[in-house]
Image 1 (cartoon, rainbow, N blue to C red):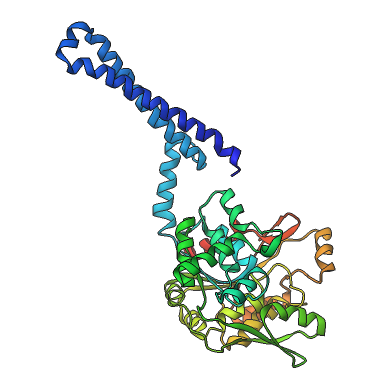
Image 2: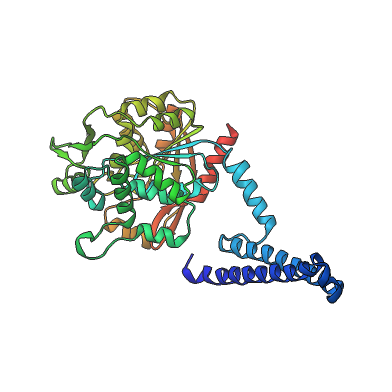
Length: 416
């Protein structure tokens, strides 16, 4: 919401407050003769009563219209709508199904925006292996966990105005802070104040009125490493894709250093209590699998009775999942955790324009669609397919349609 869009309602609120104060003054003038015996003889009591009535009417109009102006800033246009909104918030969102989404990156934050409209019981368990860009600088300089993916997910779940979102996403364009986002710096500052990354994230939740929770998968300083098919070992998430492309050798496997980090307890609790667990969407080797390499996390997911959904990417990712099919993505997960934890796979079936596909293919990306052979293979393995038109185009980029995905997930939960 731009500044100009809430300026006029703000002025209306001021006017109605002044009207209310005027009403109070008139009421006081009317009441004073009624309480003063001498003035009753000099002042017509009828005028006094009329002033009192006029003052009360002005006060009532002031309260009603000031509240309406305030609600209009929030996008609520009448009191019945406010009642419906509060009922929806209290009895629907807060009592809706418990969803845990595991991953990181842009894909995760996109679907969180849709899910928060359906439930307030969302927990995003986010990878902490990022060591590039602004997050990497803060990680190296301050010894803190990388805040980038955490920030994006918090903003996706936040109940704030657009200008606040723009402020926290703002990236500095010059000086020592070039490329750094204001939101990252806010988390860094709070980490310094409380000397605890988890507590800093919790304070940001309070500040932004977040629906749900965003939890780093671990509080330990972990690094993502990759072994390429040619045997090369690459340490550091930000270096992996570049090494794959430079050496023309795909990823064989990824692993963490240290190998057995302890997860954050709240993440384990959320998984245990979940009705639905979603893996992805997001980068297979650098966003999804790193969370599952935290052994206690994957053990808890495996034991959970929740509906488990793997949400495939719409397009392959150059240097990471080149020419990967749907089954290749699933096998990539299972080869790392040596377990089958997927009940459903969600795949887009909506066609993409030739012009847009050409642009993506120039960068080495291809659409991820199901083949007949894969359908048979997934059926034999007992993995159910959820297929549909799950994409939207934003500013020339292909994204998951968050609202459609939320509807599918909630309906799947309701069907049991």
